[in-house]
Image (cartoon, rainbow, N blue to C red; front, side, top):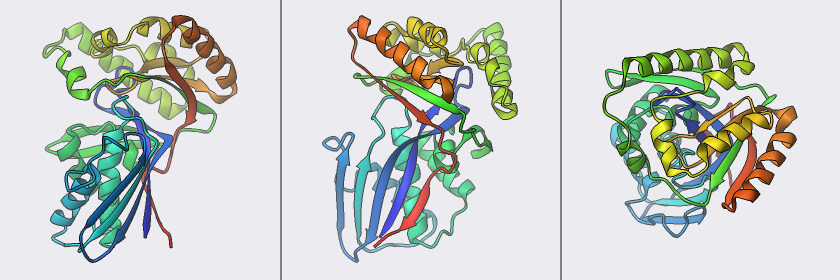
Length: 301
């Protein structure tokens, strides 16, 4: 049996709409075994009662795409899903299913596909690369699509950096979150985001983390999506007041993520918890690390 570990991911980092993402140390696990007949799918953890247990399952559908691409067939599968990534919270749960399924299928076939081929197949399902790329390769990634192919650069995130995740008890569907975005943007706003996303990416690569407070500002997606999240602007301000390097809407929401020095995690986390308690809103607050490995495969008994 194979055990595949796939990390959560936080994308659209600040001004890095559809291009900047980071893998996080929250994991889904996929257990796969070839049985010779039929399809059996079991699930536990996040969304276990909402997940399809038949051929409509996203992990299985993603595995099937690899089998078809490689022109191979696999007779019978047992799939067990252990999900820890919250669904529809801007933490890459669908990307984890797609990347995890494709990684599992590739491993079953003896790894005929390269990472680039897996990313390009995953792109057909996810449509943009900012979650699938860090999910597969780990770390902080800047990725783009050119002529239907994914190109990326990866940077391992040092251990001294942590990510505070402020996860609400409500979901926000990507489709709904994208529909609210304008189809045309002002030239000044485009220039603002290009400069800020560039400075943020270079700050991450050069480990000049103190630049994040200004570099994480955005004018393309957060001003519109923040209307779905009450107290959004105040929460971002409070994160910075309590010592975070900067904060942003993770993916299309509804999670808010803050980047901080690990040495400040107690101060920031306690401050945010006390502030949120006063709002009478139900938020889960956790601090995690970046995952620099991405999807991994282990053979188990």
